Length: 116
Length: 116
Image (cartoon, rainbow over all chains, first blue to last red):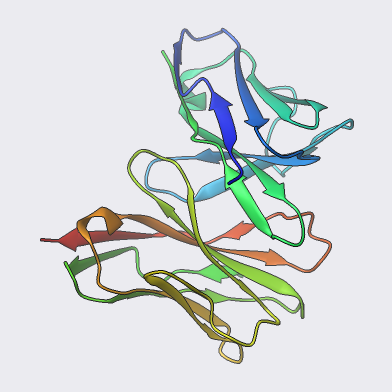
């Protein structure tokens, strides 16, 4: 079946540093990928839609300059948390839909970010 | 207004019993899709089952079935013969319309705990 990988799975960094998270579709091409943020015991909150070859579409309230998204190829999207602060600590998950006829989204395993 | 409503924040069920997780949705689109995902403590999102709005039969996948009642706008997940490994968060999600670019709308989730 389709697989989406996400790297790293866990990262701890100091406040003020930038962290890059990679999301790859391993056996299919994804022109669209989604980035979510999830707080403990809460649902997924869509941050942005990553579009291959064009700018990402950010949800209301998500800072574009804070969360940089680059979808450079049909199999790779990256999320960079710039100048991370403790309030950015969260679980970040990417997903990639494999389009029709199978209308299904495949999720990466997630990245747990802890900013000290 | 909530587009996806999961009214059960938590449920305890005895092992081997069947369990129904509630999900109601709100959309004016004629074409939409409904999904259920399982999220164990590891964080990965596991696709369980999909129901298209035009599907006349209720979807089934092994021990999972989706009780789709279109007029009531409900899409409850039924797990038969529950197992300890079913303990997890369960999310109901909806894709609206054919042109939604696969974006999903998520419910708040239900935490299911299976008791031995």
